[in-house]
Length: 110
Image (cartoon, rainbow, N blue to C red; front, side, top):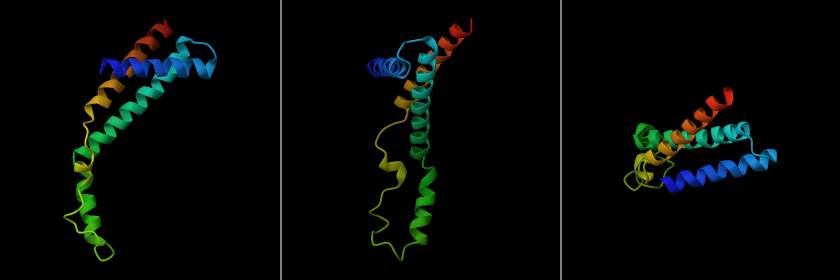
């Protein structure tokens, strides 16, 4: 997890340098907000899918369009079983990135 956090931080620094041609605290804050927000959004999306919220919708759509479907209902996995990884990794990395961004934002505002 620490290795992934370091890679994300290096991507943030690289993006901040490439976007503004110089590394400033404000460019780091902006880039880390984007990366942290994307990671947190993806983690929450995976969490919602894994909880089984869309399983009922999927089963309902299969029953509604059963005449057009050639695949048996038993052969298709629900979306909650289709995702094979947990959301905790993305949520933790995204939250840590946003916390670092908030600390830098407090330093910037002083």
